[in-house]
Length: 143
Image (cartoon, rainbow, N blue to C red; front, side, top):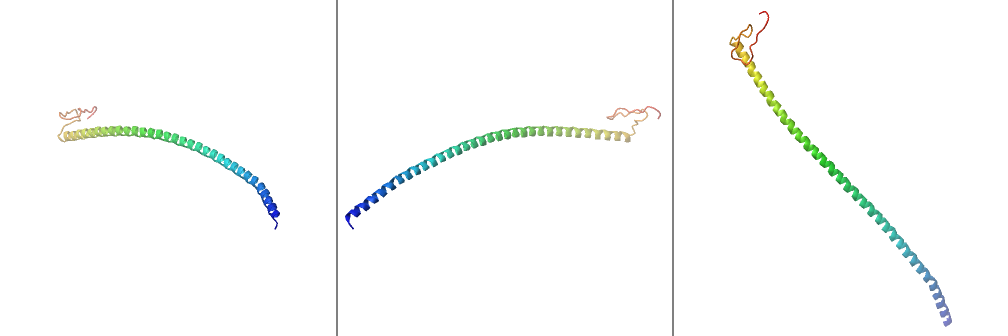
């Protein structure tokens, strides 16, 4: 081969390389643009997610405050009911004591009446019982 062919082939290779070089630069520019668009999109997405997370945290904290308030109200209600229950138990105990005392007095009175009836004390017909918790009973009418 002659040397001028080498020079022509080298020239053709240089021209082809020159045509390919701007394409690569355009591809680089477009890929950089795509990368920037993706970065912008991801930044927007991250900002949106962060905003949603902040709203979620705010909602959870509000729910926690409401739950604490309800729990405090229930605790106060339980405390109030506990105090009322203790007061009722105390009243019931007092009522039972009074009832027991009344039953004992009634039993003593019944025993005294039974004892006075056995001893010959005449209640009917105007008789009197000197020792007894009952008042003198008189039956009016015919005896």
